[in-house]
Length: 325
Image 1 (cartoon, helix red, strand yellow):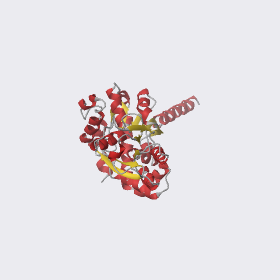
Image 2: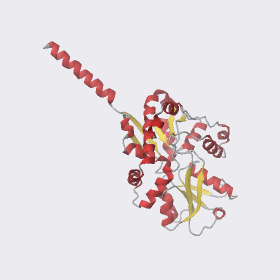
Image 3: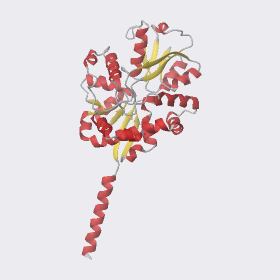
Image 4: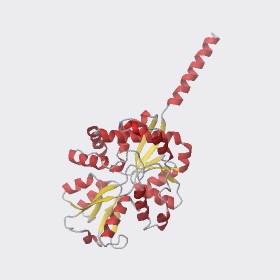
């Protein structure tokens, strides 16, 4: 009887150990807006690719103004996006590291009131952007204004309206701003509501960067390796399963117009980086424009603030090649 009891206790212990080993590791992942460069996260979550790698990923939508400080506080484990904020944070002493990027270019539209016929007419006007601070939208808009002889720091006023593009559409409709930078598919929504597409902007900037704290990377390399694999599989699914991906996008965006979702899908499918590798030219472009406000950025190397060792490990293993065979 005693031997039987001991055997049962051993079995119970082993069963308990098995449960604890196989339990999914939790990751809190923040993203700042419903933008194209962040959309592979929705696919990876919906299709269970992170669960496949024993990860319990909680996606958290947070304002771009607070998302990097939230990462630094330890309340988030990973942030996808807010790349300019992550760089600016590092210039001020932060410890963010970029593990990879979702795209090396971004498309957006400068949408205006019907009365505006040229970019030069925006001099002295109020223009809606996303979050407070030098966001990627502000970066792209600044380039356009400079190209048209307008000093973005002195000759226009940027009005932060939050990370959600629909809020900028509403600000245009109410006349709170004369123009706004709007990302797909909301630019199309604004145009169909009677606004004007003044300029299409395609800039070589990094977007959807996978940002973590350096100390978190040191203590969680294996967990983050699995996270990257799940994300890469999400991208693979996005590229090769258009119809189902569009349905996922519709759920997240709350949009029902198939033309709008189709346009959104085309934007990300045509730009997404299969292997998450940053393009040095896109990193340099981003740093140089941040350098207009913080000259330190121009001194930063394109490899600074990055750690691509996990990506290199994934590449060497043949993982991505097998996916796309």
